[in-house]
Length: 473
Ligand code: PLP
Image 1 (cartoon, rainbow, N blue to C red):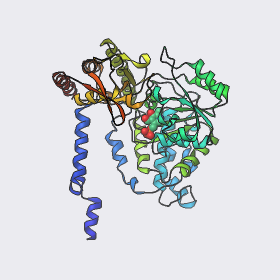
Image 2: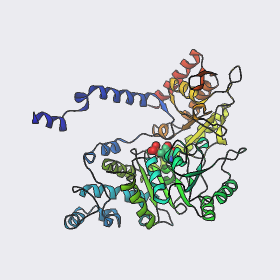
Image 3: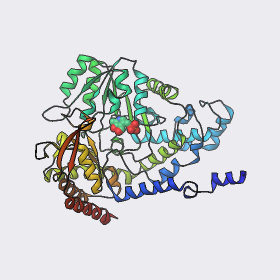
Image 4: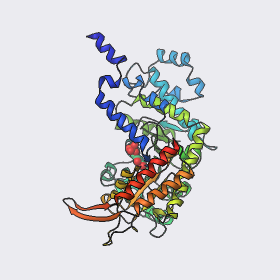
């Protein structure tokens, strides 16, 4: 009996233990290979990172933080195992459990690599305080609010409908329920950030915290301008670079380091690592507040296996190969954007200088003038093998009736799609979207947007997508 249990621990693989789960994972693997994935928040996590994620660090608890000593000096000193372990044996530490000596190494290693990646000419790695315990971007953002704001303080961020994130004050999220929210939008003509208006709004409402950083707004913000506004109204500047963090460390998106008081990002979007999030600050006192707000404020035991995966992801992030990947992600997005425009499609916000873009579908209309909505557009694209998501754009009020679809290039660039493939994709996307006949009906939940496409056109598009993938393999 005991022996059998031992077999379960070390010998039996997934197909033997649970063939149903194994099969579903196989299906998902197939889907990821057979489809063109253009979701800007998704990327392919490298095998080495997944290996670390599946390591035995998943077995342990490590509430607390690594020894302060381990956060200083060169990586070589940290990895002097004899030296560090002698301290561990001799002194108490900041963990609530014993057995965390290697958890300390892995958390510190990941932190240092992140600090190194975000260091600039003016900000040294040693001056960047890194917290890698948030379980995801939303949890990281909530921890930031808890660290610096009281309930009913005013927080100002971009509205969800024009590109902000749920956690920037949406009424459906804890942020919108707990704090008084002032939302800024985009200029109605240019669909770009209007800093004079943002400044006016900030001076009027004097928020405790000003948030910049977006989910679907495709242009990089001017951090210097945001810093000025925050200083004028006495706000803390919070940069949420969940999306473009990979571009930032490779130098293809301006860094908020040196401008923002606090920065959060996820490690699973352009960073191409495990699903997790990080909080940065260059202020020691703020770092302390963040630490206690993440643990014990927001979370219990951290996911140590993620620390290992993050460490590997940030080892990769220091390579030339990675820098090249990030450069190509942005280039591909620009090419895709202009190719879509050449095919006659309109881009919300007028274009992009990042890894994502949003197509404005409102020009595509049915016989009775009903415009194409994001939901049927994304659904039909998916049937053809192109995965995107519906997105609200300036002018929209409800997510269910979003008029846009959001596209991004991290995943396809990792698969080595280039200029040629971007142009081919733009053609297929345009052929599908412009041939959808939009309509709607009133269901139990109100207006339900739908669309129809000629079967032959859909089949042709499917075949084109299949060929694009086949040619790249
Ligand atoms: N912040 C921004 C700007 C995001 O785009 C996202 C996710 O899309 C998050 C925070 C939340 O990240 P997560 O989904 O990991 O909670």
